[in-house]
Length: 223
Image 1 (cartoon, rainbow, N blue to C red):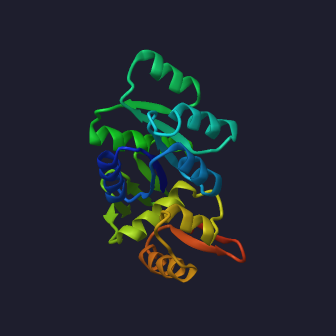
Image 2 (spheres, rainbow, N blue to C red; image 1 turned 135 degrees about the horizontal axis):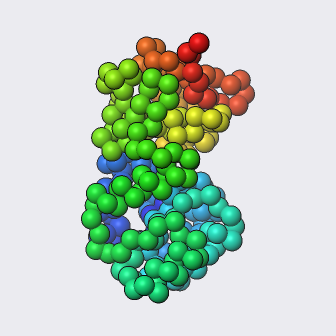
């Protein structure tokens, strides 16, 4: 899952970036509104975490632009501006959630998980597909109740497939979901990760099916 963090405070931005990367998100961090809009114009994000007090523009203007362009990203405002009028304004202009600073780390992570699940039509903290389940808080995947031995990259890839289990994902879409601006993942590396993951799913009722010329999709093998 890919996240855009829009925060001009260096200490807080760095802390949030580390926090979300440890939770297996691909994080792009920008420090003003212009850079945020440039990123949103060229990349797809599952979630935008948006400060309002930016050095070049009000975060509300960034939010308006996101909604005017009908971008699908969920938006959480994370701001020190916590008056009722600020919260109402943020939600009225299209924010999906509003948190005030200072904040609790666990609540921030929980709300981020909730917004991404909601955006993809999922309700539970557990992603489930056939006999496969993923605990998004503990970063553990199970098959028939048995823990799967997955690397962080394999878990992140499986989360993408389970979250978007009804569509074919191209290698480009997979790469966008797994990496931030300063990272690079080659098509060959994606193929290698998929190959390793396929082997670990052999005893599950699911498989990663190739769609010739299009990409990959998570399918059931149960009859």
